[in-house]
Length: 242
Image (cartoon, rainbow, N blue to C red; front, side, top):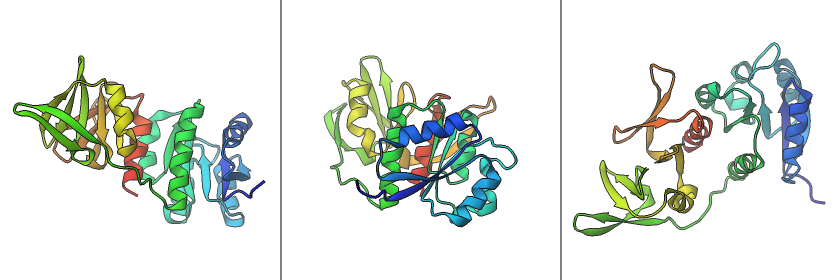
């Protein structure tokens, strides 16, 4: 059996939650748990004595919360941080604290696997070399080929999707899910059920008066980010700005 590449510190005041992380990590032999903590003070002490490449950090713990742990140690001295919490409202704050990802309990195996694959790429300093997809869209003069990097966002439109590029919309007769499968690994993330956004084109994440969130694109377009998608969307923006 090969030795794990990366050490993991698990910080949560609930024993069941710590066991849950261990169980999910069992599918990833590249990672090994090197310590467990019940509160923020224990996390700070552990980081001085053990080598951890990743810390799964609960937001609300007795004494020091997860954000205070990062503030006291400083983001520069923290290992890669994956917040694992029952509260989705802290996603934007986690982004500002330079977290690598933000998982909301209960975490599905599929969502955890997505996070771990991204984490591996970051820790190994590698990026996929997959060929950039191109999308053929309808125009008033026939058709046009758009590289994925030139697409700002995509919205569902009945039996079509509307592909937005440079402030102009183009129709494409292709199901949203099928198109998402083609471009999803190239920097596009769902903002809500009917919208896919190219993360590298997000200029700002803003909070609305009613407590919602919108993604402001470089073109000035504002896309609503649903509550359901918020944590994943914010984490994706954070990764794009590392």
